[in-house]
Length: 324
Image (cartoon, rainbow, N blue to C red; front, side, top):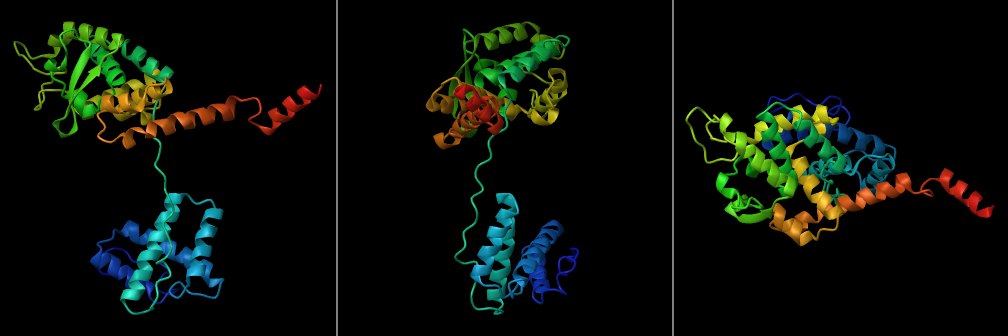
């Protein structure tokens, strides 16, 4: 096969034109061996299905393709897997038409499945509280620095790059607001909670202990590194190291998860989307609307798990109680 990648096994012998398709994908599209193997499996699966309907992988009609897609749904494949299989079929049949192997394209009137937008990962309010408490058990000055990072993350919903590079000048004189320079150098004013304000005051008392002897820094979180301030990667490391002490799987925790927690909890408590959008620094409110779905999903789960009639068993019990 051109491109030096491994040849997908079991395809050339079963389908006459598949080998040429994979050679084209490797040579012209620079497809990776992983993609070629995945497409080979997809075409083999499709060929097995249409073979039972009297077709081969290269002469299937539109009805067979639609029947195959229905069958993949019935088999419980995720929309994302179904979309990848559809992509393999679409590209394969375009190749057949381009090569003059067939005149019509059975994929031309078939739409891709809707993948939906994945809900952002977040933390519960209790988990955020546990994180801050765990940070409070660290030795000084690491304790004060991590506590203030968590408090500001949760109070202001900053991006990790925004937090890492915060200048001292971002603090208002009374310490109740932050002036944040976000994407596109756009500035926004973000109010701070009382705990975040107190954490900043405490941190400023010990901040100089992390400066080189006789040195100064214009950053809220100074560092000896080239940038002069703590890096986003270092903040992420500190959070993951703290997670076990708070009873949280480190794989669930990242700076962006704290940003999601900030927004999700605000919406849970009735904050309007425009205000949340402004504090997050989203250019489009459509980006912020995902948090209404998070709240809706949480309510759905609450009803499913806690409502007395959410299960058939409890529903029957309730019916018997009402009869008596």
